[in-house]
Amino acid sequence: MPYDSNLDEKVFAESWESDATRINISVFSYNKGAKKVQITRENKDATGNFRFTKLGRMSKEELEAAIPLLQQAIGSM
Image (tube, rainbow, N blue to C red):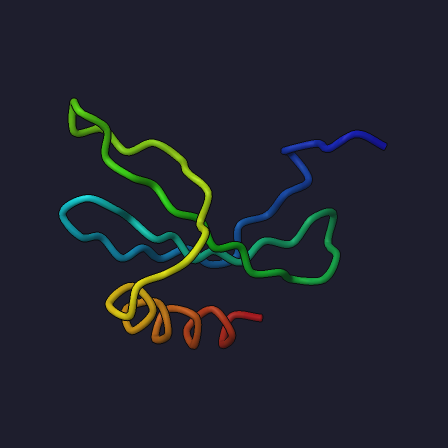
């Protein structure tokens, strides 16, 4: 069965932003299934627009900002 965006329910979404990057913490439930956390990173390009990039490694500053958001996400699960 292919992915159907109409079945994907966003339960929670919060972001942290610095000068060059944004970390997004979200909770989704697909087709009324188990709620799962999604963590993504977006970096600013030369024009100042955010573009999706691989999350990869996180700095201490990013991690310290993400932990409270993850705790909120857990509360919505």
